[in-house]
Length: 284
Image 1: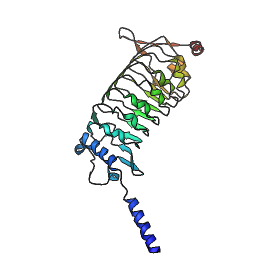
Image 2 (image 1 turned 90 degrees about the vertical axis):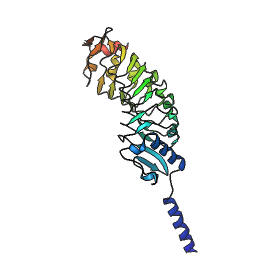
Image 3 (image 1 turned 180 degrees about the vertical axis):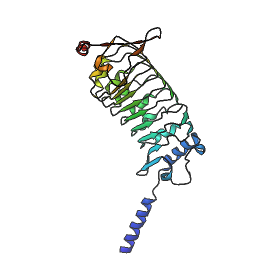
Image 4 (image 1 turned 180 degrees about the horizontal axis):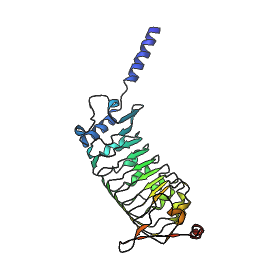
């Protein structure tokens, strides 16, 4: 009897070692491989080998939880099916040659924490469904050709720490909900076409360390209360249409440049207020 039990346990243990990624998930990865010209990748997949051995694929409990194929010569488009990898926590396709648009139903990736599609050739808008990624911590889409406005409900992403969207063609005003991101540390929106003003609610971004709105079309007065953000280290708001004076405390932040553009597109320098009570006066 003992031998039978031992044999059964050994069989069960061996079976667990042979457990595989579900065919549905494997087929999605194969679709990604095919749609991005996998045969020309720098590091290719052997589709006949176990998925666990595929470069850049992270497996946990027999499910795909991570894809990191940065700088791997992916050329093509993203398959819509990639949003069916329901356990995915990281999608990093940085610095490739991916074209087309972002998957419209990207919000289905409910466990996603890191999304990096930067330095590609993506066009179109940022899908509104991205605001359903409640566990997202890092959103990196810089150096693409994305256009349109930021999704208005971006403030739903309460765990978001990094928003890096510079060097795109994004436009419109910054959504009011953006100022609800109290865990946000980096807001990098330079070299786009954003317009409108910076809300005085910017003081809600208590964790903010880096702020860059360089080279946009924003206007109005720069809120004095930006200088109240204790964790803020670097600020670059240059080459917008901001006007008025700025506080000395803000002007002394790392990276701050007083150069702005007037209505004729001519560069000029903002004035720096020497009034020690300037911040309080502006708040009243």
